[in-house]
Each structure stands twice: as structure tokens, then as C-alpha cells.
Image (tube, rainbow, N blue to C red):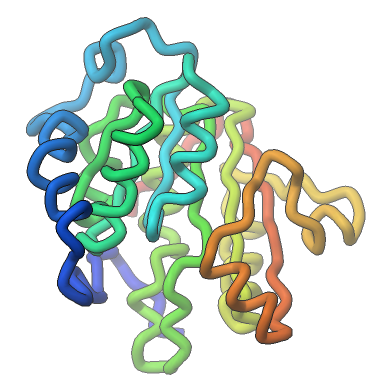
Length: 233
């Protein structure tokens, strides 16, 4: 099945040359948004007392992350994205919207997972990750047991994990792993719960492009069970 024993990032880190505005955002805005090195203390990451901490893994161009941060100003957000063109886009949005509740990690998300304390996260987003459709590349998929085990340690009981994909093969893969994992329970009660995007879940450009091409997306919501021991093996 090519199931990974651990996860590391595969994929592009840079794309087309940035326009002057986004280059300036990287130079002048990103330094203040970057996570510090070493162990992460959520209480010290922001200039105010946050009510909760949410994480987006692979935020793309940052549309969803910025949308959530604007609407939840008392919640602290961490976004992890190695693709620097997407980071530049988010930095520009953060500057325009004055987002003081946002921090960014410009590399592999597992670096963040390994530095946060347990029972820290109230919500995690993994939206339209690369499906790596070829069989020989499936070990690159981020929705796999090593990452789910890390998330289980970091998410409090009742915390929500949101996922989305427009790839049917990856959908089957996600459901197989998440429904088998002892720390997570599927929140769906009817078909619309995975066919319809919730109102507090904005459409991204990637999703809009898929919809325009006639490709349907699926939206998954899982809750972290309470007080379950999760193996790190």
C-alpha cells in the first residue's frame, strides 16, 4: 500500500517570479509573521491573549486562512506552506487586512507539529492537499498515520479536523485512514455533510477552478475523541 512510516514534504517551493508588491510583502511583512525557532508556546506567539489556536496545513495562496483570521480576531492562527509564491500572497493579504492573529511557517508542516505542546489545537485544516495520484508517489500523501498521530496528540478532545479534496482516490484514502484511527470520529450525519461546503468554509481559487471544470469536491469534518492514547509507532 506504500504506507509511509514518516512524512516529509515533496513538491515545489517556488513558481513564477513574484510581482513587486509580493516581493515587498516577503521582505517587509513576512519577518513579523514568521514563527520563532525552537519549542512553540502558543501564549507567547501573539500580542494578545488568544482564545484558541487553529492550524492550516498547506494554505496554498492563503485565501481560506486569511478569511478565517479576519472573522475570528481573538483566535490565533498558524499557517504552514513551503510554496513561497503562496506565502507571498498570504503576506500581502495579512498586510492589507492588518492580521495580527496570524503566524506563518514557510516549510514542512511537521516541523510545526513537532514543536507545539500537547492539547493545543482547537481546529486543523488540510484543504485540497496534493493527491499524488501515481501509485509510486502515494507515500508522499500528508494524510497518513504518522501525521494523524501527531495531530491526535496536539488536538484537544472535541477539536475539529477539516479536510477537502476533489480527487476520488485520495478521498477513499483519507476516509480509510481517518475512520480507522482511534483518535478521530467522523462528524457526518447525512450526505450533505460531505457534499456541501459549510457556510464558514470559503471557496478557494483552486476549488473554484475544479468546480468550473465540472469536478466535484468533498468536505470532511472529523472530531478528536477525548483522552485516547495514540501510539507514536
